[in-house]
Image (spheres, rainbow over the protein chains, first blue to last red):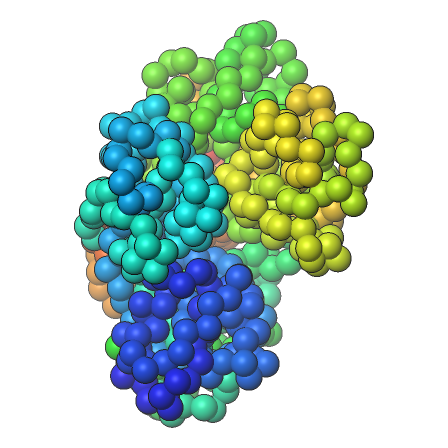
Length: 277
Length: 277
């Protein structure tokens, strides 16, 4: 675990009960104080403006893929990745106590959660699917408005926090459903280094330049665990590239590879070098 | 334009007025018959099951990035990309006729559209933002439910179709907002070939293998215009790679590069070779 003082504030996006809060406990233990934020950007800002010691944000899901907004925020903010953790995602169908599945006419959740529970939704074709931006938030929504003909898809924790009932457990289609979360802090707050190093860079618009950029790692036997590209605002069809390297920033090979990459990349930022919790 | 018979059915996701319908007119002309589908998967299925001649789907936006679900559907279905087009995206604030901005307490739209109109939303902090999965669908929602205190963010076309009023025009933060759309048909329905070739492949889990895969193009001076990776369901942390090549499938270099790639990639599928409209 990463050591923080008891009661240290950890920012995350979503209502209490969000999966990110759970990931925060895995990385920092249970003595932290969660700071729920409305948006991912608010969670980044809370750390940058010293309202929180760290933030915990989802970055990738094995079914839905990357959470792209958070890649963009990593590039735009100057926070440092200080740790990561993987969480098995379990979805439950949640409704008001006393309500049965036959009474449900609408199911609210994040589109990714609806997508991940397609088999159940297909068996109940008459139920209207309504997309919300947050799983725990959809539980809060149907509770606050007293919607007895509605259910939400969210975590067990969300059901408990809002005093709601779990109608069906583990309704996700594919049990190989994991989300990877990153812990972020202001720069130089935690010792740097670990099995993984994450970087972001921009390349000149030339033929074969991505190939050359990857060669700086291949030539030094540094393996990539992830590549992601994101559009650059204001310059349509140009991209920033995000790489996760299986390499410690404190190693000679990693430093040499990054020095080599700087020859090709007008923009290069190390996002962090960190361990898995 | 791609030639289809007058009245040919073209499938797209969303309610009438969706940006995809507009893209369909750019690729096929105005004499087509739009076939609105509930989901992207339904649009793919409509073509596969011969209910539509083609589908038009968004694949990438210059601000929000790739539409990942459609990458997944391209891999899982056996449809062929037969053309692409770029559309400038303009967002408008839409409400019931007679309603003024001061009366608005809630704004409904797709999260990407809300994200792209942040400046306006920041100036009206008291207005609640509600995420829906479809821009045109959010116009239909506030019309159907008679929500006079709500507005939606969507296209001009959506406002017209649902008889609603445009309160504010062109409210997007960044005018460099384009979406790229693909036209899909069953295999061998249109002549193959064009400036661009799209492929998807899976690699062995070995160090440096992505570097080797890209080398087959770099060594033949074939430029990449896009790389995208998506998780493979059931095997966490393994990926399929999608490439757009600036190369015609009918050229010798392109065929040789793909033959070379097959040596490295246990799975390789050509998604199409096509022109831009």
